[in-house]
Length: 484
Ligand SMILES: *Cc1c(COP(=O)(O)O)cnc(C)c1O
Image 1 (cartoon, rainbow, N blue to C red):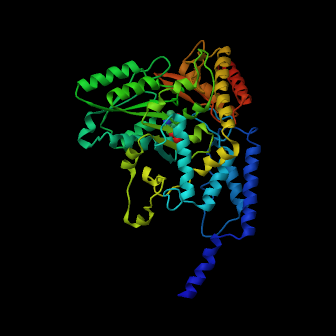
Image 2: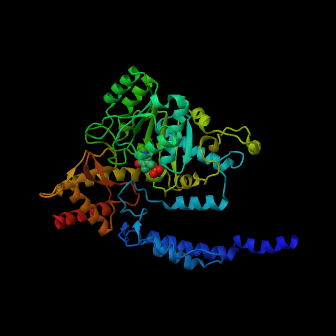
Image 3: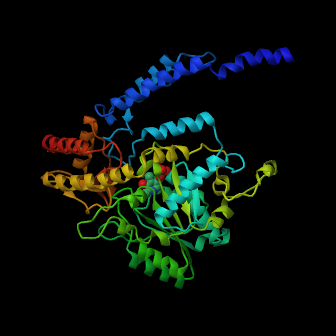
């Protein structure tokens, strides 16, 4: 048996490359990464391609090893010739973020050391880092020191964790589902509807609260709806507000909504996945108020979803949920299996695994902690303020080119469209999007609100500067000239 084991060991040991081989691989990967970053500005944000990435299925893996050079070449040929380049500063569609470099180094070290950030007993340093980041975000939204939350994979799972916590805290057992009421607007992110369904509440009553002309929740209408539902014997239990909607970047009136929730004892959840980190920005509004003042009332909420892979420019893979009543979060997510009995040690740190559906997870904290340590918070603030101003600049300039614009942007997203002299307006604007995408230097996406097609500008990549906005303005001018 020993000789069989030794024989297997020889092949198995190739999984631990020699220092020489490791260095060679590191070197090739670094060349790839630096070439990618150094050429990003000249490259496209979107590639219009027939049969995209066909080389991937054509290059299967098998029993035998392959050389790094060859594998990277396949990646290069297939990744950067098709689809969106989410790392590009020209990415102004959906909600971009970019992918700051030291976050990649954090991921690299997290993967190499494979620290376990689920249980304090196993990874005290990793857990302290995760909880420290969460406490920082809790302070940012004005939560007390006793609040916590979890680092999830993104805003969708962050919203799901908050939803399930609210459902259980409000004791919405199966017999109550059909008469329990959730309030949101038509502009809420679709992941909230997903969370309702995944959370077993597809049969609940979901009320679309009307919005004002800025696509913000009408708090007066909310109040009326809650009163009507109570009078009808229903069980209102949850309001989901948005601090920065995805479509238009609108800020719901959090303070008013928070007051209504407090009065009627409703769970108040704020989806700030896109907008939350604008709490770091000090920017005045034309009406004399500040961008920050629109967040007033977020501290009244019971839970918040906030995405570092949007507002802190990290590569995809981390969204945070913040929950004021951490005991409620734990009640929904805690479970202790017998085989984990050794992990039950007393500590001043809660275990992330007790506050999440996940047990074993990537150590997501390091990708955020490392950049915050290396850069300090200041450049993040400056970049966020820059994004607000870039959106405002575009908002003004695009109207000078004859476009119709939606409401003045609350944050860094705005909507606009061109109304041609003749023909179908929606169809013209969809052709305009295609024109931008075919040019490829900039990527924008569109949306439809009440049957009207709007083009969106979402400025949130740390790589987006005046240069990109000016190119886009030029591409639009050219597009309008050609397509009319
Ligand atoms: C992006 C977004 C989400 C979803 O977050 P993911 O990180 O994509 O899962 C939820 N809400 C809002 C407002 C968003 O912009």
